[in-house]
Structure formats: C-alpha cells, structure tokens
Amino acid sequence: RRGSLAASPSVLLLLSFGFDRLGLQRIYCRTLAENGAVVSFHDSCAYTNRSEYIDTGGRVFVQHSLVLADWPAFRDALGPTAERIARRGARS
Image (cartoon, rainbow, N blue to C red):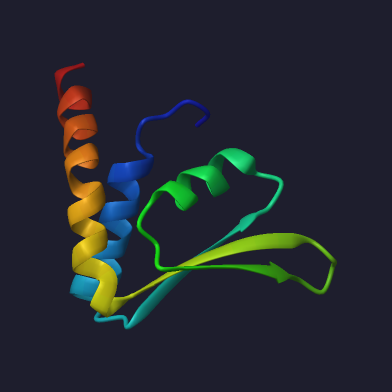
C-alpha cells in the first residue's frame, strides 16, 4: 500500500525467514526500475549487491541481493528502524 510504513519490518521478517529458518545462502529481489519508490527504499537498505536485469520482454529490473555472511550487518542496520515502526503501529 502506498505510504505504508511496513516496508522495513517486512523486509526483516522475510530475510530472517529465508536466512534463519530456511538456511538460504543468498536472497535477491527484483523490482521494476520504473518503480522508483521501491528501488529507492532498497537502495537505502544495506543490500550488498545491486545490478540491472532485463527480461525477455525488454523490461528493466533493479536487482538487490544479500548473502548470508552479510545478513547480521544488514539486520543490525535496519533493525532499529523496523522496531520503531512496529512499536508505533502497535500503539495505533
């Protein structure tokens, strides 16, 4: 939903599930390059890799990825923001 504050907590929950529960070694997401708000959000996170991807239909995507070794630093960087947002939402 546009304007939602759930982005940071959602990203942390998804990455935690992938790395901590499923044991994945790398997680990536692809966002249509024209979706500037989401690309900007992902750019502001601590993802360690960013690249462009063009599908067979010619659509341009921005791909962000994170490897398991970088997960603790990512979690520590985004965690405080996600916790503040979650607490604020719990009071509503």
